Image (tube, rainbow, N blue to C red; front, side, top):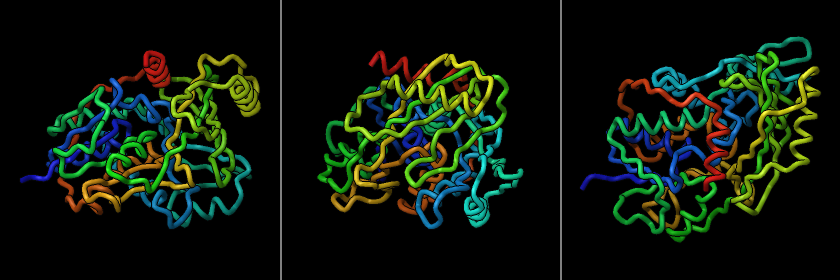
Length: 345
């Protein structure tokens, strides 16, 4: 009997896993509880594609960010996903970050006290997620929307748990209580773009990359995200004090910016409740369950690296050299689509 695969979760990581399986000839069904893919954590992030220049050497997250880069370049070009290759500037960057980038093989240059990272880019995360799903369907995958998983999907040989904020709940259906997800809220404000042409990065802390100011593929600029740990997985509201603080920080980074944002939105990143990060591997509680959980803000960047690692290293399914078919992804502001969906939900 052929092996069948169920992917639970239609965010960017689940969609990348489903696409990668389908392109390798595997029978795969993706289950998404919402009526659209990509409107949860994936559709409410920054859209920034990181190079990993400041990532920690030796961590799985870092390895998969770097692994994703060449895979993503082929996919976005082949599928026609909008990408703004604008590069980034870290003001007053310490020498340790420059050295870290060179050790990891990420190109950087100096501009006085600033560090320039030309490989940093921005995309539309909902467009990327939908394009991955369209490519998966082209290769025979089934996409089942509005279907929250209520059991352990006994009709499938392997269940790949990519359920984001709900991944701990999915694991519990298999008796796996090895990790828990605690949402980390990231709030953003959006402005008309007065001419910013590069991503402005702060020096990161051990907990967060800090507040970015960056251009988008829609012609706006964003400022964010905040980082607030919550217990409520349904709190997508932007706090008034966060909005005010982000406006102040955006104006400080861009003197002359009109302090009147056109929109504000929040996303909930699926962080590990006990510090877990990139929980990727076979469950010790079920030989049918493969967890792909606690994927925080770099999930958009690393999605194809995660998918390749899961399929090649963990499932042992060899890649097949097949081309991509261009799609016509949505190109409007992704945050409006995600926020509209949340209000309807």
